[in-house]
Every structure is written in structure tokens, then in C-alpha cells.
Length: 544
Image 1 (cartoon, rainbow, N blue to C red):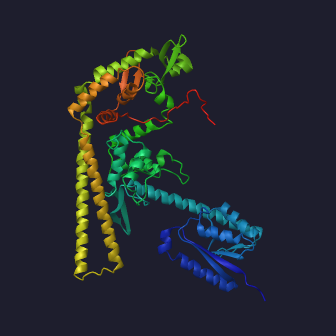
Image 2 (cartoon, helix red, strand yellow):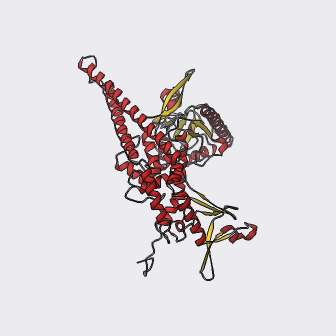
Image 3 (cartoon, rainbow, N blue to C red):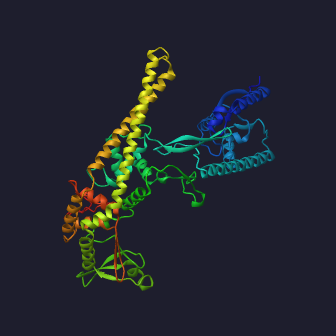
């Protein structure tokens, strides 16, 4: 008696949408059953792969089938597919897995492309696999071109939107509904809070780093969109994503996560959540706190202007040089020191002279109450605009919570009147959804109100400006390091030295943060130490 060959089906479609709506899988299964019946094969198992690409082997059912087919003894003799493209669309990978199965005595058979095992049929199978691979890449190219054009027109191409946004239907073209992003009032305030913490802190400290922001959010039970806890990576992505200033970048990275050329990136205009000035200030803040950008010697070194002093001609850093056994100390152009006058004609200036020049200028010309009020006027105006937007946002959240509560009351009235049945699963789900929306809106409104109250308490007054100016003028003249050095860096972020002038460049936002923090108990500095050297005096630095 002849034992029938044992066979398995491998059925696949490319996308989850095809798996839900397409008739391809039932048709593949019907043809496979007829194929087995006609040849007397015994069908032992069916592997169904809904919504998976055949350009790689990251397919659970495929791997489960290969694992079974390469085990000893193999539980089947033949793998049946509708066509070789269902198995693989990469000619190299196709041959690799065909040979793995063949070593264990298992053959791959196509219903629509019947092949033998002789060299000519093997070559024909490889040629067909090359055409399948080419067709797959061409299809991917055409799909990407369509997606890029869709993005150029301002439409959303799918995937989960960034937190703070939601997808809404924009227009209908034929049978397709085009979608766009709009601001999600339930989570937009969380994004604004993260930017506020990065620039201003929580009112008890200076600007926060990414880790401290994540800790603050988790401690105050401000959850992510899916109800989880915040991590450093999530916060950093929010702080660096240009989507929040109205420029969403589509097609930015390849499948291997590498950045694509600028010419291939499509910018989609979306409603901005953060103004450009705030975004730019956060980027500068993050760069200043990056230990790869701000080395330890800039933070803990004894020199006043290390890291912020530059040559006006070449842009090179002005570094410390000594003479006469250390009796004389100079700021010297580092480019000239390394390359000579061919790199930069350069200059040297005594350290004490430049330190005193910068400190005296800031004290006498900059730290005057009238001058400070004039400089801060535009920044304070932006703060007032932000306060007004927050008030409007709170009103919108309260309105949404009230409307949702009213809908819930209507549902309860309908249940009491016998119009609706409480046991209806759809009604239960609707009630739970409305409760979640109401509770989230109320929580966001309360948090936004607390932030508004905190920012109002930190309002800059003329008395605060006068007190800050007086204290800063006194402390900036203290010799040595300490507070003088940190305070100077809060006022000046770059010093450029030319032949006849010294240019001092600072940030209005940093100045305002320093001023408001100076009114609190703790004196604030614009950043944190990237790294701090801690030597073990009179002991070995590597204790056992």
C-alpha cells in the first residue's frame, strides 16, 4: 500500500487590510485543497500569514513552518504555495530556504508554477524569483511616490500620530477619505507642559533636563497617551520633533532607520502646538546640556570664559595659554596656536583684562533696571500671549468636559425612561468612552489651571528687576569661580574677540529664566553640569 505524501499549505497576503477584506486567502485555500485532492496528498496543516511582506523572513507563521520543516524527522514532505511570490519575493532568500527544506527532504511546490527538480527548472524558478523581486521593488517605489504626493498636499498617510494630535477626515475623493492632523485638546497640554518644564522648570527650580521632566510627569501621574509611564526617549522625541511647530517630516528615515537625503523628505504643514521661538530655545538648551557638546572642563574648570569665548576672525575657541612659568595667563586663538598664522592671524589678550572687561560691561551697561525692562519687553509680551492661550485652552477643556457630562446625563435619562437598555454592550462601551473623555478633560483642565497659576505667581515686577540688577552687579564682581562664573554664563552665552571690539551675545529667554529663578529660594543657572570631576584627595582614584 502506497503511503500518501504529507503536505502543508502556506497562505499569505501582503497587508492587514487585504487580510480583512480580500478573498485572496480563501481562494488560495480552495485551489490548494483541489490540488491535494487531485494528486492524492494528505493535508496535515495550514499556515496562514495575514498582512506580512514577503521581502523578508520576519513572519511568525513562516518561521514556525520552517522550524517544523527543518526538524528531524520532518512532519511533512511538501510545502504548497499558490505561487513562489507567496513564499518569498527575494531571489536569494527564496533559494536559501528552498535548500534548507530540501536538505531535510521537504520540497517546495507552486500550484500555478509547476517546476521539476532538474537544473533547467531550478534556473526558471530563480528567474521568476528575480522578476518577483523586481516587481515588488517597483510596486514599493510607486506606492512611496503616491504617499509623498499625498503628503505634499497636506494629508496624513497613516500610522499613529504624534501625541498632542489626532487624525480627522478632511475630504472625500471618490471612494477614498483623505485625512489630516488636528490638535488633540486632551493631550496637547501635556506637550506644552513638557516644553515649559524644559525652559522654565516647575517653579521651584530652573530649566529641567529630559530625565527630570520624565520623573516630574510620572510623579504627578501625568500619563502617556496609552496610560503608561514616561521614559527619556519619549520626552526627547517630543522636545526635538519639528511637527510641534507645524512642520511634520514624512519619509525622513529608511527601513534601516538611517536618515534619508534632504531632497527625499516631504514637509507636511500641520497646526502648530509650539511657537518657533520656544522650539528654538529648547533646541539650544538641549545642545548646551549635551555632554558631547559641553565638555567637563567648560563646566568645572577655573577659567571664567572657557567654552564661550571665540575668535571673531576664524570662529575658533579662545583657549588659555600661559607664559613665564605660569605667571602670565592669556586667552589665545586656538586655530593660530595649532596652525600658525596660515590658519588665522589670531590674537592674544591677558585673561584678567578680558575677564574684567566682560564682567564690568555686563555690570555697568547691561544690569540696569531700565535696560533690563527694555530687553525683556518682547519676551514678557510672548509670555502674556502664552498665558492667554492657556486660558482659552482651559475654557475649551472645561467646555468639552461639560458637553460630555451632558451626553452622559442624556444616556442615563434614556435608560431610566426605558428607551435604552443598560445591558446593551454597545451602550456600555459608549458610556465608558464618554466617562474617559470627561475625566481626561477635567484632569487636563485642572493641570493647565495649576500651570497658569504657577506662571502667574512668577510674573516679573519692576521691584524684582531692580533687586535682581542690584544683586547681580554685586556678585558678578566676586573674584574666583563660584556664583560669579555661573551668573555670567546666564547673562552671556558667547563672547567674540576682535582687534578693536569685544562682542557679548546672550539670550533673552535665558535672562528671563535666571531673573524669575533668582526670586525663588534657590539661585538658578541656565543649565546643569554635563559632567563633574570628583578627585579623591590624598587617596588613590581607583580604590580597591
